[in-house]
Length: 95
Image (cartoon, rainbow, N blue to C red):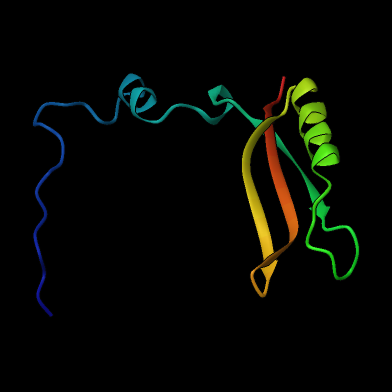
């Protein structure tokens, strides 16, 4: 088995053991912003229908936005090229 020698990634003389240096490189988790997440699913109206109720969908998006939620992604689920479901994913900061 061949052993590879590694080169230091940091300049010589940098004190990696000091508390100050460690905190600068790795922020503490309690200092990081935390989020909560929510989703809602909008499905097509009826078993054979491919139409989503756009008025209801937009009203729900606006209601989440008014409550401080930020839309981060929308996933659409299709079957044979037709949209069957749309899942909206939101986040907002924890206070």
